[in-house]
Image 1: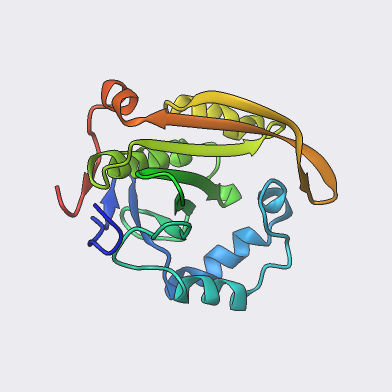
Image 2: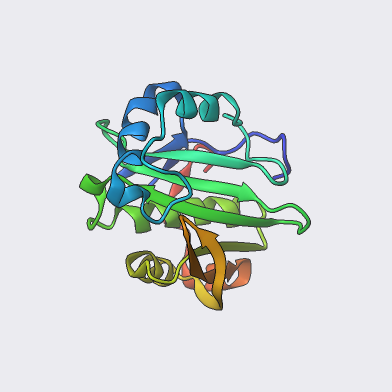
Length: 198
């Protein structure tokens, strides 16, 4: 899949339905972004507003993957409806073909239930099987141990540690880099989720 092609939404897993974030998701999205425990490790602060979320939704593609350097927020919902669990962010990396970056954020009520892993596996599966990804990367603050464990559980490799490399929220922070290649994913995870194209 190249930028501009139709993306295979919705993604479905046993408990989840994943589609691009929409205006109907904004209230739930803002609510968990304003939670200090959720915002602690993220690039935004607790003053995140509805106007910020509406601008994000208006500026992202809804039927395709992002172009080079662009982000897309995928809403993670219960398969049978209900409040937004969280989102998976997807960026197509500029300068390297078929390379994507992921991030994940869950509302506190959805944490500790395996939802983040299920959502990341669904998105990884789509990127490798439908989007032709060669490599998918992620990064996190080295102190964010729950996310480090999550990335390892879904099959990503710990590739790097950059000591005090990022000036973040008033302090130098250490970043951990994670990655998985298409060939590793094929060996690790036979396809178990479905997309609208499968």
